[in-house]
Length: 325
Image (cartoon, rainbow, N blue to C red; front, side, top):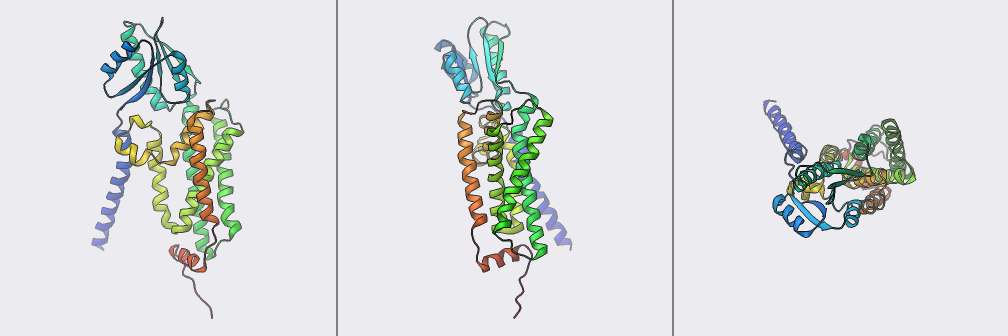
């Protein structure tokens, strides 16, 4: 028993190390790296700022109209418009982490260029505190609602020693998705009733919920309860990474985690829709990625299984089929 106690302790420490590396590590190693910002002014000013910013900022010389369009398309996180007064233009539709860094850098640059005079700050699509929190929080809640529903369904199936039919398999992701979207919508109304909850926002959330429940249901069907070892840590890992813009993440987290985490497609698309920038590229990207996830997951859930596959799935969930002759 002593050896088993040591092994359990070692496993616990290993899990803590992995989760710490993949969650808190993403936040602990935040460092600006080529943050995209725009300057509406003479090219020589851009060159001066580029020399001062080093590798932390990627400056782009634009006209005021071009800069604001880039901000609408989320290709830059802020625009510095040179004039009298110098103006810093930000957007509430941008990830708050990127906006915060942009405001700090642009305000400092404006003070230098205007000899200490504070710049005029304009925020396009201003966002409330709830508006900044809802996109990522709502995405995480959609994930956890589907995960809990899926795990409970597996436990109930195990206790009943029954193989769910097609109707039960499709009911779970559909019902869990609709109900979780309803819960998130009610919370949004509670937190800030001024946020728009039109059919575009609700439809996007429903697609995200179907994508999440589809992937979860597919893994649970293929792996049984063992899929929890994959799905549960994602709830801890993905939001910590998706809450940042890629230019602030260490390259390891940017390439290994941020590049594929489903939370970022849901959160950024939802943020654009809530702030009235539904034409932003991240909405289209979110529709494509989440739609593909939903289709693939539902296909696995609905795919007819052979008697042998169902027996193996039941066995992995702790059910041993007994034949009666």
